[in-house]
Image (cartoon, rainbow, N blue to C red; front, side):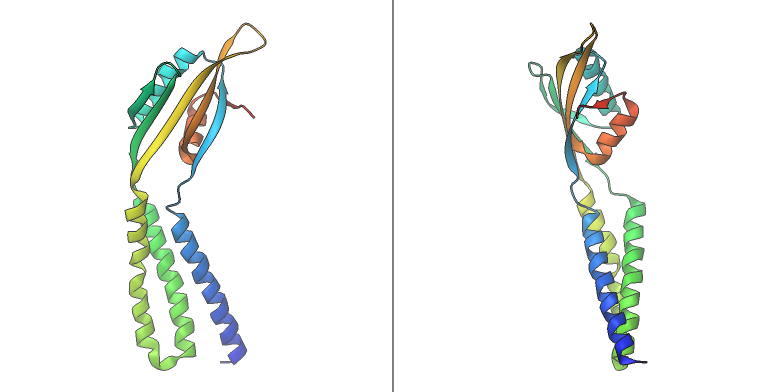
Length: 177
């Protein structure tokens, strides 16, 4: 095979491996965000609805401040079997690409290179160990008086991005910004 082709293929495969490494690492990254949402429901009623909602989603109340109408919930986030298997398959295919390129570059070491394929389950193990963690959801409510006579609420929520998305789907909330 032509040497420039091998060198460029090897370089592209190394770039693929770097991207794969950062993709696997990002699978366990903390994606906590703080948002402010507006509800047309009064503060006391919304607070009770949110308590019920998060309790149904297997969160436990860890801290409650009645004076400031703030609550902190905590719940265990379990790792996904699908994502663990998917990351293992991605790592296996990435390693296979690297092994094939290395076997063209150094043919006598081909059996040793194929042993690198045994490292691919480490991606799933890494994800499984890091993804299972305690997740915290903090919320505080303030009364909000609109131009009319209706009373509303301003909800300040600090939670994982997916939890914020799920809450917005289940409650009629608008962004404060």
